[in-house]
Length: 346
Image 1 (cartoon, one colour):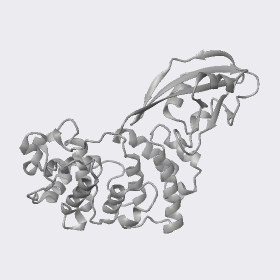
Image 2: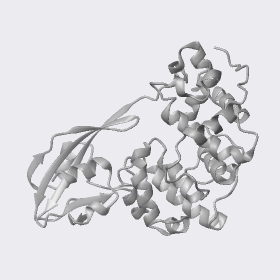
Image 3: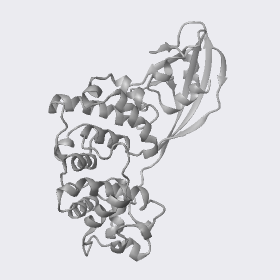
Image 4: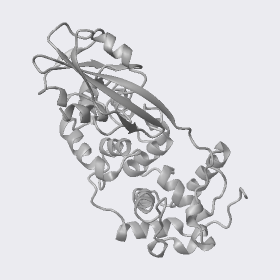
């Protein structure tokens, strides 16, 4: 397949800006603002997460941490607790670190240029560009998953994005397509996001209502779903985890804080073991073992086969680090989604 994309689509940015003004999303809570804290918060939360899921979390975070100074001053446990259920917890840890660096390195003000934003934890090239475009009208391109799909279809860009030089070429074209006027950058950037989220979908397209359908090469070819091309697939892995669900005579549950690396890093969890024998050895005095029906928890690239065992007793606590947590307190902790679901079923 050719690596050359010609001819260049004329007036692409103008079409996108006009369409967004009339038909794009206008009422999301992180729109119509040039506050980089709110834009940054939304961009991090929206990574690999649906808008409908993010809405409530966004409101709760702003209520608890109304600005970057408040977030920077928070304890990591409090940040993870508020994030609990959103998944991809490295986002929350990086977000906390980022807020602290904004305070220490930039005097509490987000830098205005994408190249400086990109030096902060958890902010990649596309996220940095989104913040700079929305808040500071910098002429800089975004290229998240939705935008890659839109641009490869419009351009007929059929080269494999699993090859780094091809992705660099798409970045080049994304920059060429930018509007000439910096004042158009916020609406243009939002237009790309809106089009990818509402019309130019991965498994379905609504070409008839697309603002750039007349210049779209994929539509002209009759195969928009063939784009983008990315052949390299991340291999899925799996793991079997045994979970010790220990309760004492007061109804408290034994939780331990996970290490800062690995699965569920930094969160509170039931103790995790590689085997049933290791689990039972950790609390030999526990009584009346109840084997909860195991289930599979699906992550993006990994399947977790979870085997909870519920034990009760009034004897010394299980071996290893941890603490007894009251039933009224654990819901306020940062817990992995499957652990929260399990404990809620008691």
